Image (cartoon, rainbow, N blue to C red; front, side, top):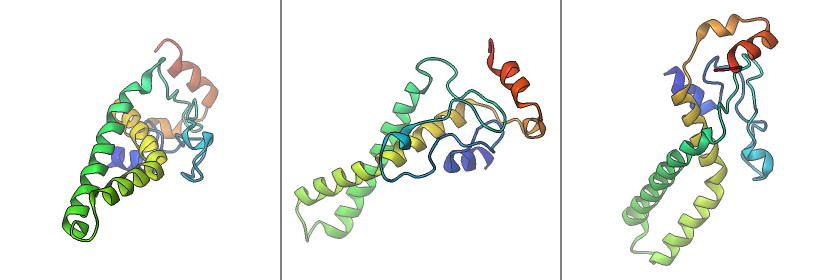
Length: 140
């Protein structure tokens, strides 16, 4: 349950304390919505291990968008098919995609980093953050 909680709350996957993103708000959608911190402010973990580390989160984002499409389609078919045409469905889905863009982007990255980095409860008690940054992130 811990890793799922960290992914949902956008917390550091190693310590569960630090924030992944610089801004907590999804709206208004702007540059800060998508900007990640380089290091965890609590344990010093470097989030982007190498160039292109988060390319895999695009597949997670794609899966989340497909889930949004299928959910929207099922709701439309079950409740609104008789009342509205397919154009309304398309417009509704496009608007949902536009407004959920920040949420899906951030959640996909959070899931990706939480799936690949192991939780370490011992890190919570670590006091020397500068030493930890050099030990953990250089050469590993």
